[in-house]
Image (cartoon, rainbow, N blue to C red; front, top):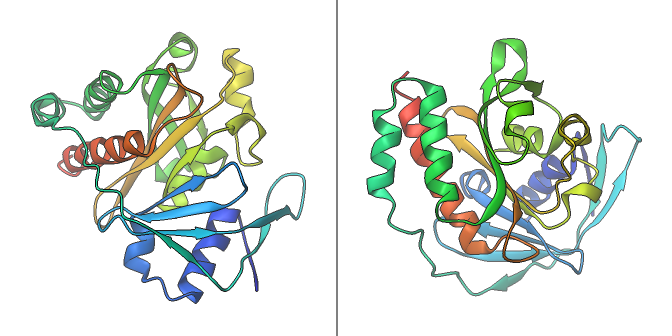
Length: 241
């Protein structure tokens, strides 16, 4: 069975719907690339996980399309019972921030105080201009990129913005969806990444990213869950603008 879409995430979404995954589950799912080429899709509420074999083929060098071939069998894994850390006190600074930019900074600082990463950023969506802007950024590329913009349909940030699905990527540099122009402009090489949507039930505000864990080669599932929780708290603050 094969599916074609504008990128592999959309193709994956079509496949999961075909396999009977409810679109509400798909909207809150987290995806993780495994070393064996499989994709783990985890329900962020129930913790249920499905593992899908994949064969990803780019239809053009600009990655404007992708074809995803999936087997009919999905292998369930046991639920992850880990819960995000209690960060309610830190989130008070997010709720009290007087601008979206300061709220983004407070959320990013709280997250990076608990997850060891070289860099992090919050990119907020400007739908009328079809772009994402770096509202908050921490790490070596801070001075270069703060206040800068990138197209809304580029990079793993663009994939997450339009799919609404969180990603945990071990080798972003070789991922066909990685937006390498940012690395070129900053002189920074992105390796592992977490990218999560900043969204409420009905609105997408942008994405939150963590780059390059300092204690291992990749971010953990627990890191992804904490980042997702923080992003949702930030979305709750942005909903009041």
